[in-house]
Length: 382
Length: 233
Image 1 (cartoon, chains in turn yellow, red):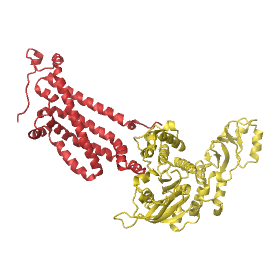
Image 2 (image 1 turned 90 degrees about the vertical axis):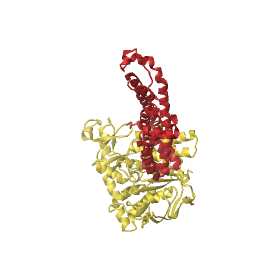
Image 3 (image 1 turned 180 degrees about the horizontal axis):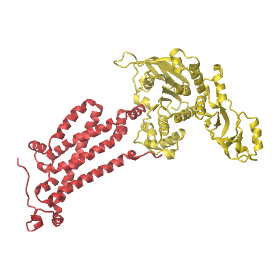
């Protein structure tokens, strides 16, 4: 089952009895295997309805949905759903079951043996960056919101489904943790390469998460189906233009990650280093302040003039190193972090937390002016 | 029908404390044996009524949970049974089922139905929608969802209902001897003017209610460990 599936909506319509307007009208689109398709639109645009028809939580009125060429209508709903990962905004973890038992729900329905389930649970917890020993036997009430969300994703991935449905999965998380969870999920997706249908009302999230974005209008009509870059540069109509927003140029920052731009070299210094050497480093660096790091290369803070007073560098800081940026952060989030900290420069760290460069407001403003044709498509940006 | 209040002579006249209908520890120690059988009869009356009452009302609640139209009729019928005074119920049943254990049980069971039915149904109804949605979305059938998710999550309410039903039944069972089913009530009414007798029989009933309540509470804690899992951070 581990391969990703191709998903095809074929003229799908949903009409609720007693309502004159359909909730989804004549929706046709194809999601290639292994890609994230974001359904985005204002409330009442039928995005959740469209998603829920895929695993038959809602019946299709007209048209068909094909999973690897096979109609979902041919399959018994419960059996179909076990093949499709399902994660929702409220997460819906079972409060009476431990984290391990929550994740084991579908494997148990499928009759896996105990050893296999146990191994799978631990593997999944590690995959979503949770410590199996610490988390496995806890109840959901004992977890933080972010941890619960991770368990929800792990549970949805339990039997390695070829398709995942995610309905505003990060909607109830605070902005800082949401950003982290989004990054984590994208990193995860690079590994697992599932086909994902992702519902959100937040265009920024859509641009960040989607390989393709389906913009839906009220009444479930498809306004545009395109890559994030295409959507930002060539909105199909005035609805798309309005929905994407007047700050399209700014949003394009979400298409690039910190690792995609040329960072500035940071004049890194350590306590005890001869001051003369530091002065030499500073003279040909783009950043005018030395950045003090520890033995592992992790940023401690910007050094003050006083720290350079003697023969050797002393531990005298001008300011803390915040914001510390990640290579995987999208530029829009990095800009927001810089503005929030009222900083002009932010050290960029790698997976180990060691500084690899510095991102500045100047680099960002240059990226904003970049010719749109050079903006990589969403898929390349991953 | 004769009212089965049998004034049995249970005192010897010599003792002044006893003759004055007082509270006599010596008499209690000497005569404690006579309470043992009625006590166990009382336990039997209560436990059987609880078991049958739970079986019926739990089944009714499961039916009504899926078929909502059943809720009103079931509530009304069990509500009427709940309001009929049990003494009246015993006498109404005597011509049909005669004197004895069965008659007493019918009245006791009828009384607990509403309490348990309502608690089971409330417990099931209180299961959050998003949890049910997640369960269905993962591929649980209705039956699997009911037994693996909804019933376990309703357990705190169900057990709370059982506790109320248990204490109520212990109290009502003291009237079971009107139906000729014995129990501690028979001892109380054997000499209702004698303080020692009333106190011992009454205390045994209170003790039984407290013990049953404690046992159900322990069972509840055993089957709902997650309710005590508090945020550990």
